[in-house]
Amino acid sequence: MKIMANRMDRGFFRYQKEFEDRALEVLRSGWYVLGNQVKSFEEEFAAYTGGGYCVGLASGLDALWIAFRVLGIGPGDEVIVQGNTYIASVMGITMNGATPIFVEPDEYFNIDTAKIEEKITERTKAILVVHLYGQASKMDAVTELARKYGLRLVEDCAQSHGACFDGQMTGTFGDVGCFSFYPSKNIGAFGDGGAVVVKDEELAREFRIFRNYGSEKRYYNKEVGANSRLDELQAGLLRVRLAHVEECEQERVQIAERYKRELHNPKLILPEVREGATAVWHQYVVRCQEREALISYLNEREIGTIIHYPIPPHLSEAYAYLGYKKGAFPITEQYADEVLSLPMYNGMTDEEQTYVIEALNSF
Image (cartoon, rainbow, N blue to C red; front, side, top):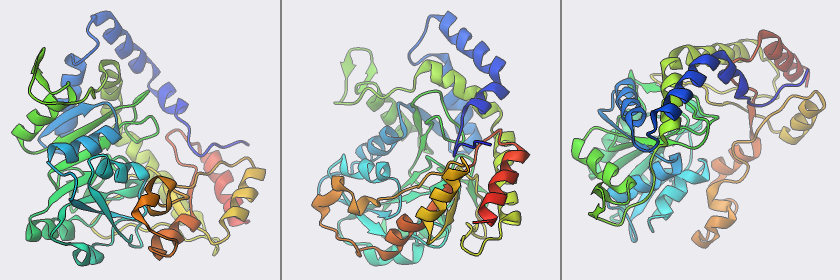
């Protein structure tokens, strides 16, 4: 039996007719940029999150860097972010000329809120919280710090569509919630796509102007903006995804619960969920000190896995200019050496789950 770490075809075939009907509807409409599908998706996604206003953008990275640009954060400013995130989170900061200030993660793979305050300086302008792997971060502590020091709060929700902390959905705690709709996400498009969610109507208007060349009225440009518009076809397909998000989320929760219940190999450290938080299991990430041997063992049995992520941003070639050396963030680096994402996707059969579990337990 061959099992991929992730596969997206089953999510398509499950709702194939709905996707195809919507695609034809868009193609036959004759309107392909910023039309009714984008408008409808923005309204529906805003209602889903409870965030107030949604603005569709071209990608999750665009959501991040445009968020900091619109908030006025740039050269000389510092933004606090966890060290073990995907590098796109950090790029959203540095593409504006600001400096990332890394904080170690906690045992749930999210930012250790107890270590944020010691990193705040007079140059700190924002905190970027990443809800990694689909679990909500400890947002009560973060929002309290943001209020105390007058900091902007941005949430990277690329992996956490639907995850909540104390009943409130990720992306709605701070100034801006940034979402990715890359195909592998829990709400995935069939290409690139992203969005921001904001509570302030004027801020939403600023995003709409910036994404469209800085123009609110055609050929009248208020600022130097970007071409970052959620595609009309992708918006239509995302509306189909959104209509089924709860059942797909529950399916992933059930797979995660089975992993937790049936995996008992002492070589594996299984993920835990924080009290007050929910996880939507974008990834099911275990830790293993013998990771390379485990990967090889699983490869022999045709079980795919992925490392999210093998090189932390502070040690990447792209950020060598920041001057960090190995050992600067030991917990972040330990996670990078040990984490492994197990197969997790909608449409994963009971037989496939059993095969993965038995293989892991016999390692």
